[in-house]
Image (cartoon, rainbow, N blue to C red):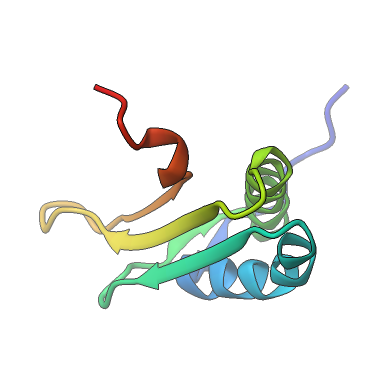
Length: 102
């Protein structure tokens, strides 16, 4: 059976991403990969299981770093959702691989 999930609590997604980018930056640099981070103002906190959010986000960024080629940059962007709903969008992209794709 699955363990009960932790209660949701407000998580500052921008802070979480900043901490993870800082923690993963040295390993990425060893591979010749740069992680860029852009945080827009007015990003809402999200009600999440904080440990699960950190774990999933770390896995996502770690996978992106693991797949990146030397000289590539991974862009991490945190931005607010539309005004109708308080939400925060997080995107991770590898622009080098997207260049020239139509």
